[in-house]
Image (cartoon, one colour):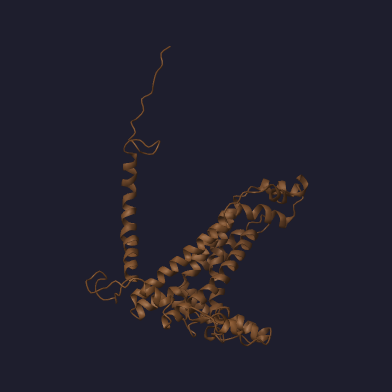
Length: 366
C-alpha cells in the first residue's frame, strides 16, 4: 500500500486559516464600494464635525480656511461650565430629555411586550389584523402624527373633551410649562422644595427644577412616542416569542408552573437578546428626539420641550454658533454610548450559581 497525499493550495503567511490565496483580495473588492460610501458620507463628515466642535468656525466659507482658529474645549465648556445662557439652555434640554427617556423607554418596552404576548396567543382570533393595527402608527409619518397630536391635545381637542366626561378639566397641553411632579406635590400642599434642592445647582438649574418632572407639554410628546413606537418593538418581541419552543412551556406546565412562573422563568430569560435590542433602540431614539419638537413646539412653552438634538440644531443653524452646536451633538453621542454600555452591563450573561439554579427550577423536579 502506498500513501497518497493531497496537495493543498498554498496559504500566505499570516493569512486567516481556511482562506485561500486571492479570497481575501476578492472580499475586499466586493466590500470596497460600501467602505468608500461610508467613508465619504459618514466618516469624513464626522471628522469635520469634530474639527468644528473645537474651532471658532462661524458657518461662512470652509471650516479649514486659514481664518478659522482652534479653540480647544471652549465650545464644550461654554455649554457645560460656562455659567451663561448656553449652559442653562443645555441643562434645560438635558433635563427635559432625561425625563423623556425615563418615562418613554420603560413604558414602550412594557406595552410592546404585553402586546406581543397577547398577539402571540394561539386562541386569539384575527391576529393578523391586530398586528397590522398595532404596527400602523409606527409606519405613519412623524410629522403627520405630530400635527394630529396638536389637534387632539389642544385646549378644545378630543382629549380634553373625553376628560370632561369624567369631570376633569384638561389643561392646555402644549401651552402648559408646569412640571407634572411639581403639580402633584402642589396638590398635597408642597409648593416649593427645601433649601438643599433649591439653592444647589447643576448645569444652571436647581435640583428642584431637575426633579420637577416633565412639563405638561412634554407629557403629550411622551404619550405620542409610546403610541408610535410600541408597534415596532412589538414585532421584535413577537419574533423572539415565536423562537421559543412550545415543548418548553409544556414541560413547565407538567411540572406545575403557573402562567406567571412560565413568563418570568422561561419567556423573559429567553427574550434577553430581544430585550437588549429593544432597550438599546429605545434609548437611542429617545435621546435623539428632534422631528416631533421641530414640527410641534420648537422648544416652547418656556423651553420645557427643548431637547439636546433640537438645541444643537438651533445653536448651529439659528444662532450661527456652529462650534457649540457640534459640541452638543458629541456630548449627546457620549451620553448615548454611556447608557448603552451600562445597559449592556446590566443585561450581561451571569454565571448561574447552584442556589440560583435551584430557585429557577420548577417545584416538581427539585
